[in-house]
Image (cartoon, rainbow, N blue to C red; front, side, top):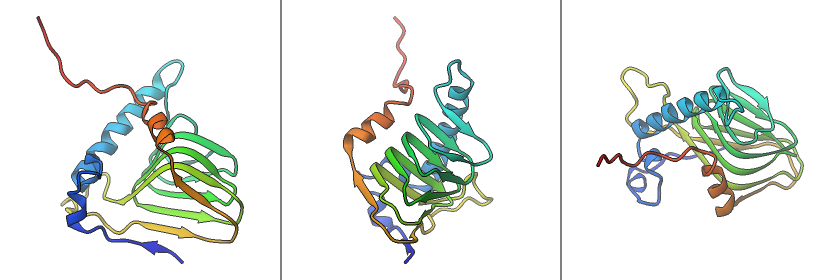
Length: 177
């Protein structure tokens, strides 16, 4: 059956939650920054990112930002995947890395098969771009399993570190002498 969850405000202040997921405003800023990074990376030669401005499908590798819905193929993917619409996977889909479904906050896993996800998944329902007025609280995320078979979703710290390693380093400060 489908699973939905309304995050409790007290747990969002927990320091183990990444700063970009502690509030809708922070999540929107994160999406703005990641979209800009993907656009810049896609424009490089060779490309260091994939930017899909109108949704898409396939087996993502590297840093992939999807504005809209995304359907993962039945093969294998890896890296950092950010989807602002609905993410749909098939039973045989495999992925190693980090998946963010921030925006619609809707994941649909269809069909049987023995697909495995190793790394981490973050699902959050937030208005992006912001409505007027912007929502002050996260909506309920949605995660649905359809079909039979075996599905593995397992945290893997190495896969997460490798996914974050795909992003350019952040500037932490500037000093002049």
